[in-house]
Image (tube, rainbow, N blue to C red; front, top):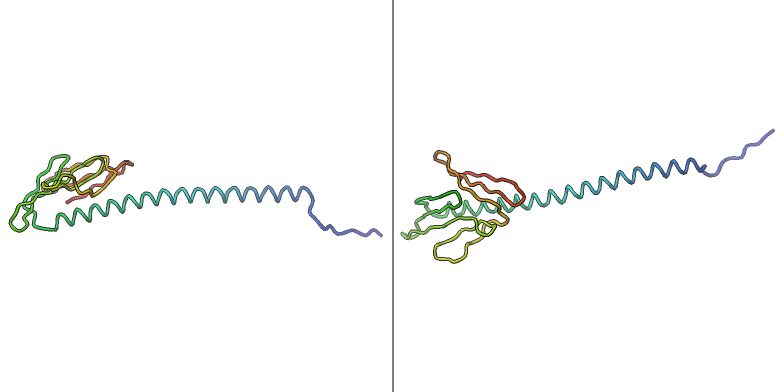
Length: 146
């Protein structure tokens, strides 16, 4: 009778369907890679900002705990700390200076920069507590009680 020959390849329709599915899978995979890369870059920048803010608070804690604070004066934009060091009264003024927070001693001309890229700096008093509110260039607000 009739003998059937075995197929040794794919038909055109099978090849087109295969190429279609592989293209869809590659497209989805490429989009996932780009989305993850964008998320990584955003997370990296956020992490850098939080590290800078944490370093600022460590420096501020160092300033506050260095010697005995005698008096604290402040208005909305300045925080002045008066402390005794070897029976000499020293003041340190923490203020927003050219988009950066700096600590300025009376005998120095330029401030010691503690934090850069600051949009706004406020000192707020609620009861007996004093809060520092910092708004960075990207719009994030950081509030901490000192």
